[in-house]
Each structure stands twice: as C-alpha cells, then as structure tokens.
Length: 463
Image (cartoon, rainbow, N blue to C red; front, side, top):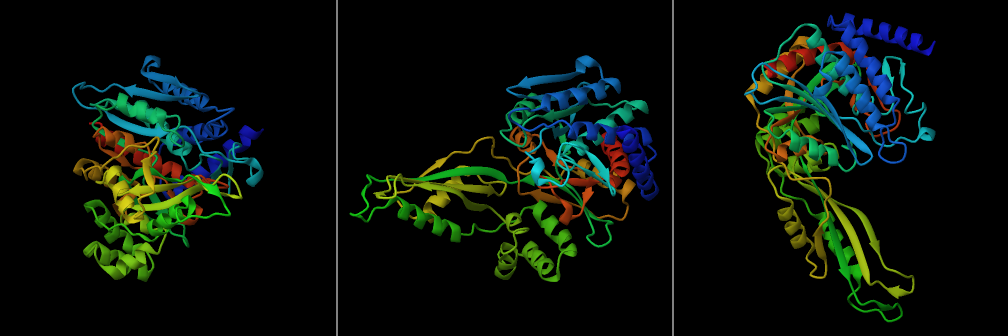
C-alpha cells in the first residue's frame, strides 16, 4: 500500500514538474526518485550500523540493469565503508575520461530531533524529506538515471564516462582520496555534490545558478603551551592558559588580506544583483577594488560573505589545566582555517605564528583528510556546456561561477591537477537548505529539469 501511495504522489508531483519544465523522460524521472527513496532508507552514516556498502549495491544494481556490464561496475570495501566506480566505455580510448563524482555517505541524524524519521523517506507537499535528500542522494540518483536514459536512447560517447561514489566524504575522505588517485588520468570532473541554483524566497521561481570552480583549503593548526606548573597559591608570570589566551585573542582580531580571483570577481559582479542594496554595492565595489575598506567592512561582517573574500581562521576548541588548585602545565587550542586558493597551509600557519606574537606558543599542523588545492581553470568547453544545459530547462536564469567555502571530493581531484567543477542542477531556497541539519528536504520539482540538464551536459562533455 505504501509503495502504491508513494508512486501515486510521485506521479502527481512529477506531472506538475513536467508541466512547468517538460523534459520528456518519465522513466528516468521515476527511477531517480525511486532510487533516492531507497538510498535514503539506508542509514549510510559512519559508525555502528553503517549501510554505505548497501547503497553501493543499490546503485550497482541499477547501473547493471540499465546496460552497464557487471565487470565495469566495481564496489571496493574500505574499512567499514566502500566506494563505487562504474565505467561506460567510449569509442576513442585515447581520450581522457569524463568523471561524474558524488558520495554515498551522509552525516548523522538523530530521529528524536526530527519531525519525521530521517531514514524513512517521505514525499510531501512537493518535497522529498530525509537525510541525504539534499546532500546528496537525490543528486546521485539523478545522475545514475540520466546515464541509464542515455543508454536507453542509444547514445554512444566518444570518451569514457566514469561515475564514481566515495563512501566517507562527510568524515575522513579516505575513499575520496583513493578514488581520485585511481582516476587521476581524467580529463574533467563533474562534481554533482557542488554548485546549484537558488530559488526566489517569495515566488519560489529559479533566480540564478552557480557552478563551483574552486573551494578553500581546509586546515587545522594545534596551538600548545607547556609550563612546569605548580601550586596555585604561588602564581608565576608564565601561565600556560594566560599565554595561550593572549595569542588566541590576537588571532581572533586578525583579518587576512582580502583578495580576488577571476572566478570570485565574476561571482561578486553577478551575485550582487540578488543581494540587499548595501551588500550588493559592497560586492561590486570589492570586485572593482579588493582594497576598498568600506566594502571589506560590510562583507567581513556578514557570515555569508566573509569566507568569500579571503582566508579565514577561527578558534574551534580549547583545553587546559589538570586540577582546580594547580597552575596549568599545558594548554592547547585548535585553529580551523579555510584558505583562499593559491596559498599553502604552511604559509598561513607562519602568518598566524607572527600574529600570535607569543614565543611560548608552539604551532603544529594537525590537518587530517584534506590537501591543498588551487582553483580549476574557467574552461570554455565546460562553461559553454553548463550554460547550454541550464538554458534547456531554465532559459532566463543567469549562470555564473562561485567558490565553495567548504570542502568536497573536488579537492582530491584538483590535488592531482584534474579540473573539477561543482555542477548540480538542483534549485533550492537559501532558507530551506538543511544539508547536515534538521528535516532535510529538497523540492521534487527539480527532478524533471535535472534529468534534461544532465542529458545535455553529459553528452556535450563526453564527445
């Protein structure tokens, strides 16, 4: 009964989506939603009860049933998770492959905190609810269903098309690194876990679409001070907690030099049109002059824009002392940095050391699961293909580049000098983006246009 009800609701929603943006691929649309619901029901969270390998099995089953040879779809176990790589062989083996990149794991979700069970998918009021609805099981199944649709229509790619899903992107990224190393010969990567469109908060209509051509480098630096300690009744000038606290205050007040790249300049110029007058004016001024003090003050004061104008470093953890009645023998803190492309973590750590201005503070890079990476080039073939694909479904929607402040699997490909671009076609309101949060949901009206978009993008970039 539940399956019939779900199918009925999905059919009505997909019919509505088809009226809004007719795609003409009902089989692929239905398959994408069905697979997404099945994947959401599998709790692919690292730790006890992880079901990421089962998600891989679900995806492999769909790909093989859709025409991929069983031998061309491999699932590789790694610790308690797994990754999947599937290859559609092209007609010219000399060409570098097109890679479609995603991940199967999701962040933890506590059922008691949600209105609905996070691992029981529900389609309601035009939304798909569940952990992974936005990040990123629906995106993954949209890509799978689109590739199967291309095979159904008889498409023959010139270059290999590889679709891969890592199994721990949300945690250690161990499989992400392995996959990128295995596919370091790729010509271009479409990361379907990045980019996307913004819906107007009032009308719900598509407002603009951004593709991601860069992301900031993630880094963790440990700051520590060690002292001999002693009895608290006999204080001394050298106090580990006080010395560390002074350094943290100076770091907290410090602002790295704001900067621009060709990609972020293009973003500020275009995105300014959709911001409040004050923010929009600051964006335009900063794009014209990254040393504009007034613009920097406005953008640095907004959490939504401060990360876009340069490197940011913040204190995230602190620990110190060993007894209430003893002088501290040790105090430590963690500084988390998101580094603007083009800078090395070692250089940023050296800059923080100068800012801390405390010789007793020892700095150590303790970053795990991240590597430095520079921006991908603004390749004309990719830019043209993504604009053409978006025009097929939302012809009046502006398309421009952006830089992500967070990390994704693109980092690992860029580390191997493979251009990687976030290119998800999913549109959502900023106020309804609940990735990693409570009651995650995505409008199912995205499904039909997303299939059409992917069919265009995949064909143009695999020729």
